[in-house]
Length: 424
Ligand code: NAD
Image (cartoon, rainbow, N blue to C red; front, top):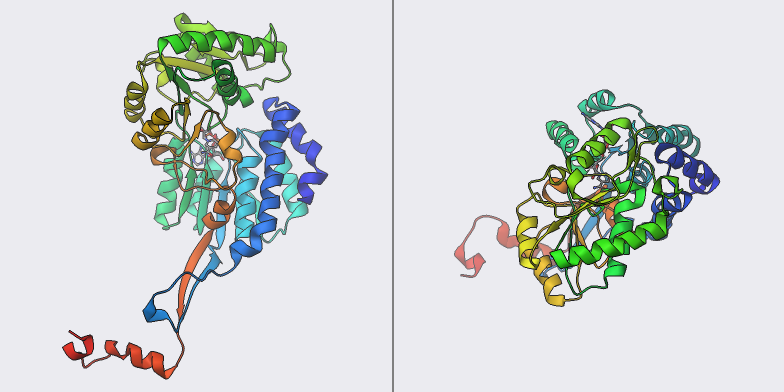
């Protein structure tokens, strides 16, 4: 905690350097988030780490039945660049709290944040318990050849498969926090102004470089029209006439990702309803909304991970469910509707890592909700107590005594066997 409080300005500065992140987003989405999580952990650690005594049956009435919380041993935590502090330090703290020693590998793409971690962790933490390894794919490949007792990886699905394959060689358990295209279904029952604000905020924080950003919208043509009109007002109110001049919009992490996003806008030129401007000198991409997009369009192939929001018209919730189920299971699924039936229908008939109804991204802040993917969006989960549990082996133990009554009751298991002893 001291590292966070004494170096708060440095953390905010590192995020500004890497992503031109505003102070508000840096505080809300990384520094404050990290501190709240740590406080929660410190307040509850004793009860989380305490041996559990689960209920027991008649046969074990005289015995102790205990689940001990055992650290795995050496954990490897590999972080991603988009929330370069939170995604690395939050699981690291959980791994330490559970009693593990940790090797942390920050993302090489977020250079200033990596520098912060490299300088600060050795100053504040036990150097025998935590070490930082810097590097990109080559160094990580070497690292993954080692035998770890737990691997926690955050990043894209393709590299997730590489990490999983490496872990399999040593039978190392993993958590894979991956990505994917998170859909957002909006029906005609909602307050469209509030819906537009909540969807656009989730999409445009960190300039769309958020694993749980709404990737695309599914709605009817009527809702699409209302949404775009509301979005136009919201974006003008938030970012002004010239969004490039707004201090509140992040920049794209590097030129490779910038070119990828620019090419997506280029390929969707005829569908731009709002935005579309780009500037390679600053790696700036204007918040962009595309309308009447088809499921087969290029923009619908991979996770966008940038400030471009395509809207795919569907007739109704049934069509939206069909569309969602025809694709990989997403990390998050957003539904905007005041109809309990529509929400229940989507909850019951789709699969996703998590869901949020009538808002975006805010589910991440609920520490009692496990956060993770399913299928190609990930394996395992963390946040709050789940982080502690993730890095903990639950060692179950039956403790017997030598009481003559217990021995007599249990003697049925000894030979010579007989039906009489079995009582049948
Ligand atoms: P990235 O490029 O930072 O890569 C992630 C990590 O993998 C880095 O530490 C990197 O050094 C390492 N790496 C890269 N190539 C490797 C290789 N060939 N072998 C071994 N290690 C390698 O991040 P990214 O993958 O661009 O991150 C973006 C993706 O991460 C998006 O898909 C996003 O949705 C996902 N993500 C998921 C979550 C989540 O919590 N589920 C959070 C953030 C990002």
